[in-house]
Length: 224
Image 1 (cartoon, rainbow, N blue to C red):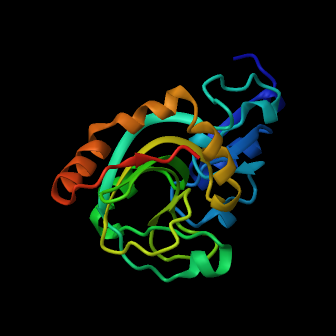
Image 2: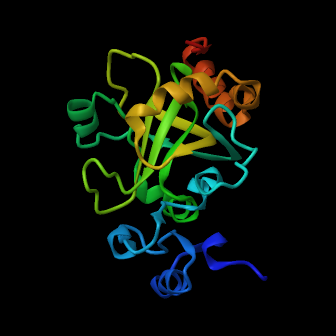
């Protein structure tokens, strides 16, 4: 390549790879392939959660152009199930009332998607469609030993809705797991046409229609 090592940026997911890059005098970003072992990669110049978190501008390179208003559009994915009672830790400690879903139902999703904070739309069968920000992964606030899915619906319901069918359309990524500071980003970004169009998703709408037919209720989209 005829390039000086200090001008090279290496991205590695293994300890030998990190060690080799540093030994060669290169800058190294570590993306650990095994979760919750970031401390072992301390010799790297930067340790990140996933490739979604690479910031070229930190290294004097041109930034990626696909980020929009601090969000990264992704291929939408769809999950749903009954709302279950969690540990109550989010509401009590962080002031974040999350609508928990049974993680064992989504083991394939959890393995395919990197942990972090995502956002999108949530449909509750008897209430309507709402903006949503969601944490997926090893929750750093509570040192979870298993991956979790914790959606936070950006609406004040004033009551619990355990057992109610919840459907989610996840449309974008924000950053690693720091959900409390990302509600503002999700709230703003979901007004963009790029993301707002998913409120018409049949995955959300069909659930509402089925329930409304049975109960005679009319669904309302929350746009606050």
